[in-house]
Image (cartoon, rainbow, N blue to C red):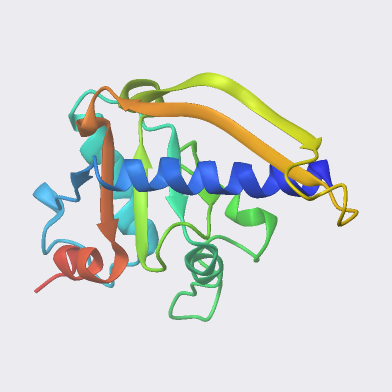
Length: 178
């Protein structure tokens, strides 16, 4: 029971952290790559977002995508029907230019985030995750237990410029040759 409950709380915490990232990041900017890439795809968009951070003197350390977008990227093929990143599966390498790709259902399908986690912010943990099982009110009479699972903390955003967010559809269009 404890594992199941703590897993659910950790999922909620992750969703809350991702929501905080979404409300404090910088929009994708195609820059010098606007209207310059023929048949732009998701990999191109992520490379330009990585470049955007590096031009701002950041060191991208994580890419967040929806699991469906990750699968779509894994299945991208060239004009000869060959996978862009070799065969599917491990060949995607779960990274682009050394920046790991993390899948999260908390990310809206079609959106992505590239982050320099060392400069974006810090999660302060005020109270570690704990689970308590006890009785409350009429629990004894009703032969039941009350379970409490909690943790207290906050994500302090230090530098919102250390995160770039975008949408694959609009950002591919911004990169695509005219």
